[in-house]
Length: 138
Image 1 (cartoon, one colour):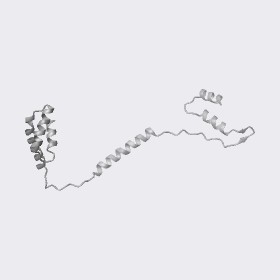
Image 2 (image 1 turned 90 degrees about the horizontal axis):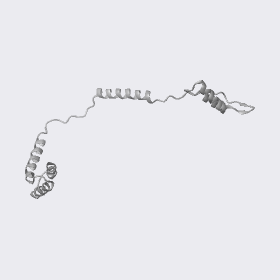
Image 3 (image 1 turned 90 degrees about the vertical axis):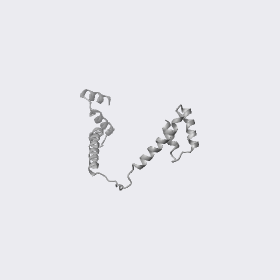
Image 4 (image 1 turned 180 degrees about the vertical axis):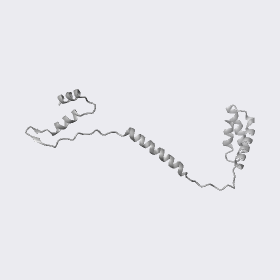
């Protein structure tokens, strides 16, 4: 916790004596040893210096490239998943029976009744007994 506070105090690159006194007060209020402020500041500045000096400056910047093989593998996997999901989630549309051409009779137009009769009689998952029941309801 103390090292985080020191890193915030050192973030501007310099630390004034007034900041050190303030850090010691903060350490005391947090229950940390105020005498460790100086060593934490030193550790922070030494670590920061090492990080900066370890960056090579003579390496040319590498350009961004795409690996065509990796892209092809991802596209292939995506196509495979798409095909699988299409087989799972494609809803089969129920086949609608062909309806008889519309005709009028003496009793009136029976086309809607005939269409209902055919639809009820040929529902999926209905056995002969269920079809007879449905026809009786019409």
